[in-house]
Length: 500
Ligand code: ADP
Ligand code: MG
Ligand code: ZN
Image (cartoon, rainbow, N blue to C red):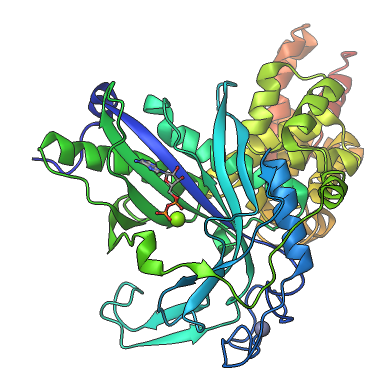
């Protein structure tokens, strides 16, 4: 019997329930409980001090900006902000956590009971409930050296880097998401996308899934269709791209359905997602909260944000992504479908920045939504990850508009920029891509093409001006596409004695 069930059979027989836990690293200047720099990478174990190394006697101090960001995130997610809350110790031993406990929040989180409206690909909006958002700190990083998988099993030895230990994290946990049926994988992806866009707009994190500053754990369970009770969930850890979120949920649905159909039980456990084949494999059996022996953190004072402070923070919230989308649609005069294309390709911000850099809206839109989206898809990257800036795209648009480049040459210039060859102007001079606008250079190519196709010349002279297309084609080929086709056509007609 197969290990997975056909997806259509899964959704015909089971109702999926999702729960998404997202960890976001805040981009504060310093760590959450000490003054060490909060910076990605760096020489291992250089951003450390007695506090984040958990040395005896070192005391933590809470990072005020971290608390402000937590409150702003809570407000952006329509949560209630707790008038009083505190930190808790989550005790467990793991070498990447030098204190042997994580400073987190447990039953007294800073933000509770909110929601995020999430737009799906077809424009339908669903409301995802937010259970809580709480503050905690990141762990260090272990690398397992030797062995085939990079995992601890089979490794010769492990290295530890505590630069990340103590980096501020906000964990955002959804309420169980029900009723999404076959769209569960799409909903999971759309939720993480919407959350990422919100956090990016608030400027609290650089939300780079590829660098781990935004990480998602996906809880999935299945219940027989129509059943009122939830099934047992698995929790797939650290799924590190939007596409993987969707794939991991879908895979778990097909795996659990096959188990249940065989009369077996789903084990409550954490699982790991494999990018290579899109499957998940078992991690550790799930701890229950008792295993962590949570207790209130005695070294940090409770946090009691005043109503005035909360309102002050509310006033700093930027225009939120969905408000912005509404405004853009009106300002740019877009149909619902055009707006959806813009949102689905993740191009809205990039188009806006390209317009700010001087490009007309329609040109900016078509470059990002069409050509650049194709480029991103073929690299399996997000549009925003392409190594080209809105200013560079605006420059290409400008050069095409003024006739220095044809659209085709513009695409080549973009290819050059994506290949790391520098700014558009540098690519143009390095690759020699300018349009041949010098008539005398064109005339030589035209005369050659006319001489090669005398029958076409006769047709043109006889009044069949459409026939000029064949000559235009030959000239474009001879100039490697670097001629302005319109000008070439004019010159051909002129030379054949026909006025265009
Ligand atoms: P844990 O610490 O065990 O991961 P959390 O409360 O942090 O628990 O997160 C559990 C997540 O799973 C939440 O998003 C919750 O809504 C969701 N969830 C709870 N029960 C189920 C279930 N049976 N199926 C799917 N998701 C669930
Ligand atoms: Mg959890
Ligand atoms: Zn430190």
